[in-house]
Structures are given as structure tokens and as C-alpha cells.
Image (tube, helix red, strand yellow):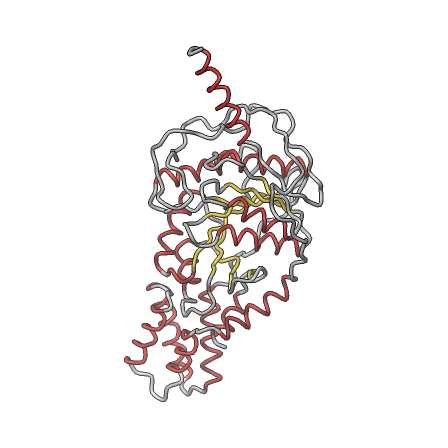
Length: 402
């Protein structure tokens, strides 16, 4: 009897683990009822065990390890029920058109507590512009997180044009400042989201960033933007370490009729979930697959290696067309440090800047672009479901200058 008991316990443990690996799809317009088909040799590893890198945060598990050299292995065929994984049924909503969002977000930025534009206009409209005024202009720009190099560039350009202009009416100053700020924000950067379906596969997008910047919420809001543009979208919940992250993403998807691929086991290999999502997107011929990743501190080497692995595994199936880094506009220069590290790890293609409302830190847009050579593509100015829109240079500058 004593010899049989360990065998029975081993079998039960194996069944529990296998049961937790079943990914779940939300009810969708395409009514996915089974995925995937027979496995091939390119499928990723099962969730790992062991511990070399630990992240201290709620909902995380202690056995997070940097990936080994082997990324891929075979997995068994998995049944996927056509249900909402126990989520409350939510009526499908119709997202607001993108054009209407741009107008509303500009109006909100105009009303926000923005001292950058107001301060510069007041200083440059002074009867006498001496060195003290230019010092104040520099201080205003630095406080707005413009960064040292862009600040000097803008001040030098303004000095020269004010000198040439001579007399200055408020209208002249506003036009002058508008032109120089537009140059600095750089309208030549390509801010188009790479979300066009390819001939044989969907566009693939990864969303990355540190803890607490709102990545999952951003993915949900961006799904609404794409649905409003009549895109067929699928979400991948590769944040497997934060409690309820997958359910949160699934709820966002459910609200607009978008399916979500997720694992039922906490601490599952995020690369495996991301791979499942892309494979499902290919099988179901969707337009865009969006992969939500776990937040990670930029100075945690093991966790950044894990993010690199997610991208590498996904690329076994399809090229990653877009890697969006979500940054909190209120973090200022710390956001720049985050951006540098993430860009080195996964080749960032665009920035999503959240929490621009109620802040004087609009200069962070310029600082990030100058540092990375990567455009700000989306901005968020509120907590509402449709408070995310494509970044528009002239509209942003006009809002700063009221």
C-alpha cells in the first residue's frame, strides 16, 4: 500500500497541472469552439519551475526564472470551450469613432492644468526680454520635462527669431512659439500603427512597460480603437503573474466582442500564452493579435530576459509588427530611463503616453522622442473606456498653447 500511494499522488498532481494549462477564449463574432489543431515541433515549453529571479509584488509567484536556451518543445492538443471563463455576461458595446476622440482629448488637454504654454506665452510677450526672462523660459521648459538638449535647442531658436522679429504682439509670439514647438515635436515621424493584416497572417502587437502604468487597460482601450476602425482583433493575456490580469483583459475584450487567449494557471509561461494567441490569430484569420505582457522593473535582468523570450517565441510563428511601450507622463525623467532599457530589449516601435491630463509635463513627449528616436503614437487623457487616441502633433501643440 505504501508503494502505491506515491504513484497515485503523482498521477493526481499531473492531472491538476494539465487541467490548469487549458487556455480559454471569450465568445466572439467568429464563435471559436476549438483550438488548436495538432501540435508541431515549434510550440513553446510548458510553464517552468525553479527560481533565479524573483519579483516582489502582489499576485506574483516566487519561481520566475530567466529562460533557458531551449524555447520550444511539443505540447498536447488542447480542448477550448466556447465560453466566457465564468465571467459575467456583458453586452457588446460600440466604441466611439476615432475622429471624435481626437477632438474631445484636445479639449481636455486645453482645460488641464498646463503651465508650459501659458508660461512661455507670458514670458515672450514681456515688454523687455533680457537674460532673466530667457532663464525663466529655460526653467519653464525643464520643469515641463522637455529635457536639457531640446530645451537649449528651442531657446536658441526662439532667441534668434525674437531678435529678428523686433516688435512682438501676443499674436506674433503665439505663432512663433507654435511653429518652433511643432518642429521640436517633429511632424515628420511616422506615427502610423502597424496593424494591417498581411496576406497569410495577422499583424502582431506587443504592449510592454513597468508595473502600474496601465498596460492592460491600454490594451483594452486600444482594442476599442481598432474595433471602431472595423478591425478583427484577438487578445493574448501574457501577464500571467498579476492576480486577475487575464480576467481584466478578458472583460475589456468581452465589452467589444473580442476574444481573449489566457491560461488558467497562475505563473504559466507567458511565452507559451503569447504563442497560443498568435497561433489562434493565424488559424482564425484575424486582422490583429495584441499581446499584453506583465509589468517588470527595468533593472530586473531575469524579467527583461523573459520579455525578450516572449518576443523570440512569438517570432517562431510571425513577425512582431509593433512593440508599444506604455509610459506614465507624470513620471518624467524616470520614464526616460525605463524607455532606454525596454528599447534595448525588445526594439520599441512606438510610445503610448498616459495620464497627460492635469499635468504640466507635456515636454516629456519631446524628451522621449529625442532620446529613443521613437514616436509617441497614442496618448491617454482620462480614465474613460474611449480616452485613448492617436497622437497628433499640431493638435497637441495647439492644446498646449490653448
